[in-house]
Amino acid sequence: MKKGLFLSLSFFWSCFATALASEPVRVSTFSSVLTELAQRVGGSLVTVTGHVAAGSDPHEFEPKPSDLKVVSKAALVLLSAKHLEGYVGKLREATGGKARFVEVGAQMPSLWQGGEGGRAGEKVEDPHWWNSVGNMRKAVAVVRDALADVLPEQKAAFEVNARAYDLELLELDKWVRSKVAELPRDKRKLVTSHDALQYFAKDYGFTVYPVAGLTSAEQPSSRQVAELLKIIKAQRVKAVFAEDTVNPKVLQQMTAETGAVLGGQLWVDGLGTGEAASYRGMFRHNVNTVVEALK
Image (cartoon, rainbow, N blue to C red; front, top):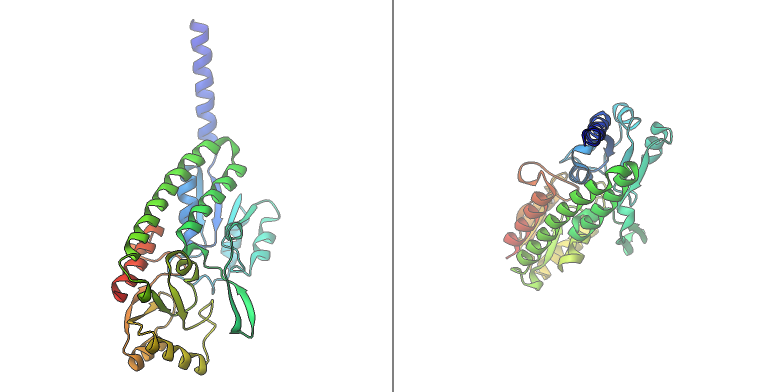
C-alpha cells in the first residue's frame, strides 16, 4: 500500500512539475478581435501579443521592427486573412518558418464587393468577416484547433474554453436578432463611412450604402456622393453613421443636404474602447446605436 501510494504521489508531483515548467504558448495576433479570441480560447495556457491596437485602423497597419521581433518568438500567428494583411511575407520571414500561421478568415465564405459600377468593375474580397456573429463562432473553432495543433496535450482545455466562449456568442446572436426585430425591414438601411458591414447586413437583413469602399482610403467621387445623396432622400433614410477610424466630414455634409441625422459612431474594423472594448460590447454598441437611430 505504501509503495503504491508513493508511486501515485510521485506521478502526481511529476505531472505537476511538468505543468509548472511548461511556458505558455506565445501567440501573435493581427486583429483586436483575434486578440480577444486567442485569450479566451487559450486562457492561461497562452501569452497573446495583439499587434493591432483596439480602436486603430487595421487597413493602415504596418508592422514595425519591434513587432517583427515579437513575432520571431511566436509559436502561433493569427491573421484575419481575406487580403487584409499585405505584410504576411515580412512576418513569415521574421519567424524563419518556425511559427504556425493561421488565416482565420480564410476558413469562412467570402462576400465580394464591386463588380458592375464598382471599383473599375473589379470585384474585391470583403475582409470584414468579424461583423457576423456566425463567422465569429466559426473562428472560435479555427483558433481552438490551431492551439490544439501547437499544444496537443492541452486539447481538452482548449475545447472547454472554446465551448464556453461559443455559448456567449450564441446568446449574443439571439440578442442581436431580438433587438433588430424592433426595426421594420423597410427601415434597415445603413449609410456608413466605409463598406465594412456587408456581413452584418447579410445576417440581419440590412442594406448598406457606404460612402467609401472597403477601406477608408477608397474615397468616393463627387458623382458617387451625388448618387448617395439621391438614395438617402429617396429611401428616406433617417440617420447616417460615422465610424471610429474615419473622418465624419462627408457624412456631416450629407446630413446638411438630406435632413438625415448623424446616428452615432460605430466600431466596424475591430474592438473599440469603453463599452466596445470586448467583442460582445462592440457588437451590442453597434446594434443599439443603429436600431435606436433608425427606429
